[in-house]
Image 1: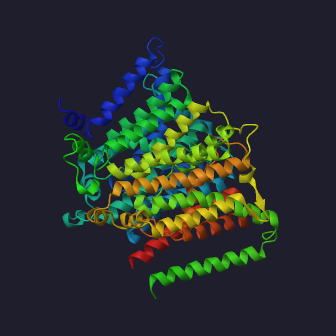
Image 2 (image 1 turned 60 degrees about the vertical axis):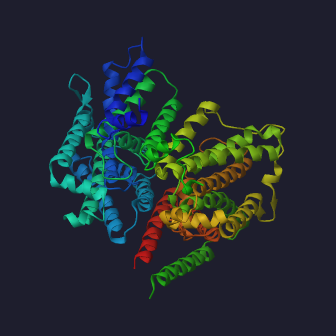
Length: 334
Length: 306
């Protein structure tokens, strides 16, 4: 069998995330055989809770990757919004939510505007943004964990529904994923976002306002991550600057496993959802079957590295070069 | 006025402000403060020199150098019973191999450098914890490496290593074919390829240099603290890229020098000491690092655009 062609079929961005999700599930279920902990509703609930925590940050990061950028400040918006909401939303949770999301929107809008007006790549700029936001969170929280004493909000967010498989928080996140998928699939906005990511110089010829799209995508990414952060802080009844410091690794892995191309222009919201579920399944599943904590790091790292290799612009070129041994080597290689 | 002049003016203004702050902050020129600053400069600076090879070669930054640094520190302590020089060699080889593999993947496949480094960070953490069982590394009781902890007046061993490392890096960048290729690959990858440069080899070697310098930082830090774990280099990725950018190395690649990195590390460490002496918490320091990176990148971009 022509394995390169098989790989290409299985690796089609629309299909790959779901194959990886199913494979992960099968692998953990095999390791779990005889214990039966994986299909316990408590395990599934913990998977969907993790999904609710990571989902929006991964979706935001994925959106910036679709327009061929990479927003390192996503965990910063996530963290700062949680702190802002906890500080302002004790009496009026909606007000806290508004302030929290607004802080993420503002962080994204400022960075997006600078990226467009100065013509810089996002990675460096958002690294600065990330450290600034974390610094602001440290100052807001005084370097410690601040409590959120509104039990009504946290118990509503935590409330298991749908046969106890998912919390209200998880349902909100799922609804946002579906809405984003609909926007990306059915509206002109969605096509403009894809066009901007595919060819930023060519898209304006087709009437796409790429500057507005990029500013909008960064604002949306900041706002989505912030919403995730606010709901997490409300749900945990606490906020701190060190909360979920590994959000970036998880969100990046989820977006990439979800079929978002690193070279831009490709990616679907539901694919990202599948990617997030894969990461959550790995985390909860591995701990449920009693694997050591480092197993998760090794598995996540390997998956991320494999997808980075698979997604690399020259992967196909190099594998083709390997087949006719020696003959196809070009001078650029020597 | 040319943008270059604006940037130089801003730079001069910041240096004057820094000098005023140094002179007006009581205790900055005391011996313990200077020793602490120079020590911090050396460790940050060594990682920053490694980071500069990654940045100049057009690969922005690596988020795995801190993990490499910690790993090399652990390897050095765990092999210290074999003698100091052998342990140093083994630790450096470990650093070069671990980082070189990333460079090979990035160079041959054009894989995304940020993602590869994030994956490498997770893999290094996972594999090292699996191998050590998460335990701290301590030196062999009979191990002799006091040379690495030596001090002549205000000049300590890490500073000497950093100074020598800066000179070597500058010589490599200026006088070797590899060094010139790093600039060419970083400033225009396609042109470099068209010119017949084996870009994969240049990028792999640039990452090997990054691993080498991170390894040096890890060894010096482990020798100083006499223990090492994976938290040894925590945060050094951010501080190193801050030093690289403050020194004026271009984030988009193709421009920079070891001297600039040296200056950036000194300024960054001095600013950190000033904040500590003035009673600001590490939180403020982190905020300042972020704002500095933000401003430097905006300045660089503004200068390049006009």
